[in-house]
Image (cartoon, rainbow, N blue to C red; front, top):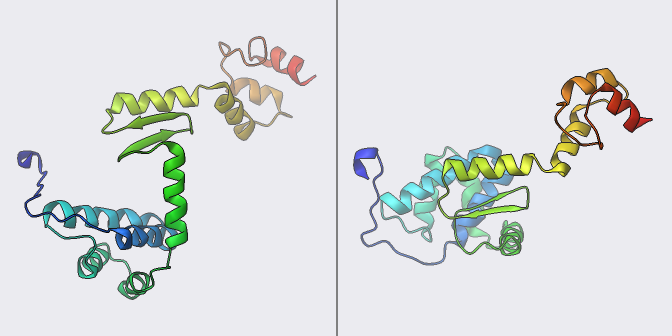
Length: 178
């Protein structure tokens, strides 16, 4: 709660069309990279603590200013209902394909879906499980290793990994690449 620095004020909070807010987030991500995170933080603060309606252009532009993003660009996005709408629609289709029914939804390696507020242990478990799939391990070795330098590759591989039908030591690699 408040003693932890979390201040939520839902009194009089207004729901409605937030498409402009979502298009602004897409714009920020496409045009300003990681700065979109500042914008989403400002939007969350506006909505959850200041009773700001995300369908109101003045609230959106105040969030843009708070995120230090270019106001003129944001005004143009808000004014043009087609700006970034295709990208937004693509994102909504992707969410539907992933089975999203709410937020947050964490998707790890297209295989692991964790809906709702997940614990650190749940997220870490999904990341470790995904990283340890044979496909990911094989991709890691392909991406980081030089198959022409078998001694160096053998040093990267753990002997307890059975990827090639035997231990991943220098002799196992020589047999695999023979």
